[in-house]
Image (cartoon, rainbow, N blue to C red):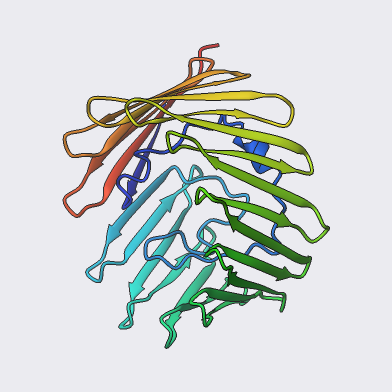
Length: 321
């Protein structure tokens, strides 16, 4: 059995999370047109910082967080080989949060944020090798936020947003690899449809429709085919889902609400059935037991601390051979 001890600040982040990774939604998401130079940097205090986990790194086996006197949350991560990384955050006098990230091999990344006169937060990230990425945000006359991201090698991505007559927000993303447009339109039932056109003229459409029970269905059509998502609301208000991918594969998610309000789920897919059992503890934190198609289990035990943070222990039992 493997155990992972984690300390988190988002106590209920997983309370109503979707089912585990036997999810055919990936078939639909595979239709998405890539957005050029996807460079988005978090601005929330306590969110994962740029450089905190490099691409290709394995997840840490333990994460410990603590809240400082200014409300900013520091983090220490320990990996399987015994190496550690650290994120030190501190809140400045303008309400923004800066960070200093020390990597597993001693490299340091700094994140400097500054709030402009329009209230938007710009970000400057300086990497261990001196490369600088800048994110400049500006608010248009319609109140929408545009963004320009400039990378360490001078490559630039711009995001321009515009509000249509129906209130839906369109977007044009221009980067080194070309331009992607996102056109949204609001239907008579208030649901928003989307058409994405990529740099190579690849098109993906998402057609949504609201059913009589208020649940929203979707049909996603892209270069690789069509995926459908059918949702239905049960008597307890919980939404069940049936997803069909371009190749005809189907996944069903049956949800049910327990007496404590926690939502259980049974996921049936071509590779078998996965069950997710959730239970709410006396402190309000939600524990979870996930049993995979081959009998392996993953248990998450959470406990809420006096300062509002949540500890988490993850135990994994592989399937019997």
